Image (cartoon, rainbow over all chains, first blue to last red; front, side, top):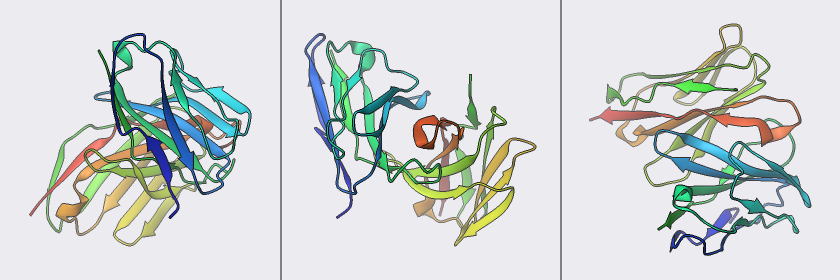
Length: 114
Length: 114
């Protein structure tokens, strides 16, 4: 089944403890992206990647890192999480650079930082 | 600042009625426009996309685009309770390629009453 898989679905952690949220897609998509969704603020892009070894900042990149060593994986790294990073996170992918290639979203990761 | 504006709602319509969801965007250079549906606690899923001025129909859904007015809308005919969800408008600025420039509105919550 074609899908974007995020893990974990739920994560509670403490301030300053490094964490990684994994994202993997099995559709051979070139483009991958991370979003966070907060009440009243909507979906905001954190980082995106056009292809392997190519990543770029979105609207809210501060406090996050990403890597794209393989086409299928695009992990989101929080080196020192803080409470303002408590949010619902979505990974998404699309086929290629085509503006009209639709985004496929993962099921989301609900992160709580205390 | 590139912006996509939507009325947050909730928009309440009776079953069988037409639901009209509206979206305005600030950047005249925007090239492609998407509507995503998001059920509570779930990830967004693509409903429709439109690039050219005019109407585009797909089943009960019609997307309408007016680039001169910087306005895109989604009409849902014969609304069903299962259409109750938050509808996200997304606009692709279209430069630099692909979804890297996809800006989401905050969403309109639709409630269809039986």
